[in-house]
Image 1 (tube, rainbow, N blue to C red):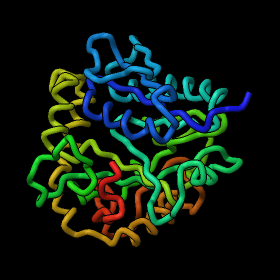
Image 2 (image 1 turned 180 degrees about the vertical axis):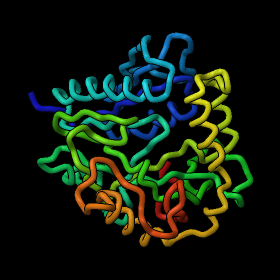
Image 3 (image 1 turned 90 degrees about the vertical axis):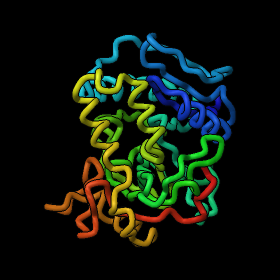
Image 4 (image 1 turned 135 degrees about the vertical axis):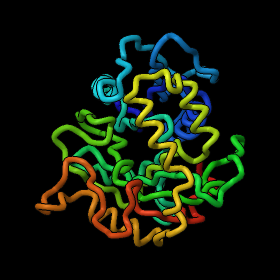
Length: 289
C-alpha cells in the first residue's frame, strides 16, 4: 500500500490560540485534518478548539520538571512519529508555537522542497525566533497573521530544529536535535517560533500553565524568555540574507574543532546576542502565518 505524502504531529498543554493556529496552518500542507495528530498533555484541562477529524490522545504521566519533561516528551513523540512513518512518507513534528515555512524566493512547494531530506531522511530548518520589538507597542490582532504585525526576530541556533523525518529517527533535548545525527541545515525551510511575538499572549500562556506555581525549572525558563521581549538588540538588525548565510555556515559546525555538530551551535559573529542574530523579517514572509 502506498504511503500518504505527510502528516503533522504536536503536543499541547493548556493551549488554545496556538493549537488552533497550528491546525489551520498544517492542515492544508498535509492534505487535511485527518493527517493531523495532537497529543494532549494531561486530563486536567480541555482544549477550547475544534478537533473534529483530528487524531488526538491524552497522556497522563508527563513529569512536571522541565528537563525531565523535555526528555519524556522527546521519547514519547519520537515513538509516535516513527510509528506514523509506516503510513506517511514524511512526518512533520514540532511544538505547537513553531511553524515551518518555505522561503517564497525558492519557488518550491512542499512536495518539491522535501527533496532536501535525501537518503539521510531528515533536515533542520533555519530558526527565526519572532520577538516583539520595542517599537511594536500594539497588541497582535489574533484574527490576522502574526508575520507582518511583527517584523523583528533573531536567527537562532536554538530554534534551528529537525522538524521532519522520512526514516527512523529519535528526537532528544526538547526536540532540538536527533540522536546520532549531525546537523543538516536546509537551504529553504525556515522555522518561525512565535511564543514571544506578543507580550500579552506570552504572559497569558505562562499563567494558564500555572504561572509561578509551576516547578521552579519552568518558572525560571519562562521568565527568562519573557525578558527577551522588547530586547534593544532588535534595533541593531543584520540584513536577513547575511544572518541567514552566517547561520547556515556556523550552526552545523563545532566552533573549536570544525567537526559536524550534533546540535546547532551559536554563531561566533560578534553581533550575535544571547537570543541569536537580530534581523528584520523580509516582507515576502509577511502574511504567511
